[in-house]
Length: 348
Image 1 (spheres, rainbow, N blue to C red):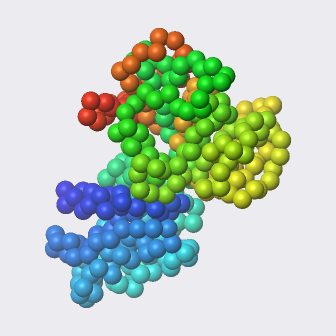
Image 2 (image 1 turned 60 degrees about the horizontal axis):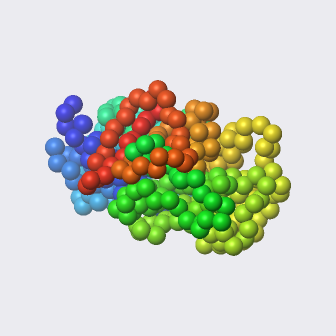
Image 3 (image 1 turned 180 degrees about the vertical axis):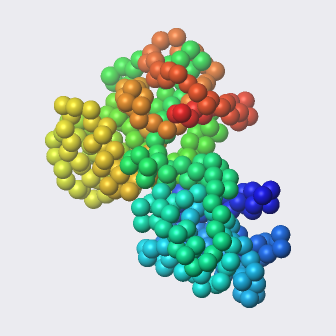
């Protein structure tokens, strides 16, 4: 039992580098073990590439050893044809007698069918090793298929006295009011590479003119999303450049211009269900909300969030725009980075 935990943890560790590269597929690592020795391992590296089970099995030099080995994998092997053939077929073809799985796949095309397929062919299958840790690894994937929406991360920075911005004059320069250091801004850019989309509201777009791209880290840019009810953003704003995909939710029109899509939705009711439905249909599995207080508070009031990451600076504004109000906080962790840090809060 203890060795099962060790090898499953290895699967989790192997899978992590796929973050930001494999979506909308899940993060998966796999190891092949014989007599308490790993003889092959691999992970899903990029969307459309080999699955972890394939990489691990191919890594075993002497394929005759597979008939006496155990395959460990953090997520149920697929049993359907997608961009690659079913992993269950390869496992059975390789005559692997034992398979240990962390969690059942929530995707309808799999969802227990891979496990049933293996067992029907005489494979000894054990499920549930480090189940919680495996679910945490693929929290985006599970939220997407179980809640039918992206995994939602709320992110903001606030001063020591609880403000996220100063009161700005109408003719003020269009730039952010920085509360955190460059080091933490680099961390935020790393986070952007890990998520499918990033969202702001109209006021943040108008006041800050953000690019919402990845400049201080290496990795893919997220899809940009802006709520712009009356299309107040002019084409010269950074969010409407053609450098990366952008979705503009508004009440005026639906059209596509280059890399920018305008999506018309009704604003005479809560718009968030309409936005979430569209993002689900577009298979965007995760979303960072970096908007101002109004947008962030609307997610909080709708209980439409999974995680909050809140930076707290040392300065005092004394007046300005108050930070969102997040009540009944549980599962709160304080992460320290040098002389700074942030709170990570899970929505229990």
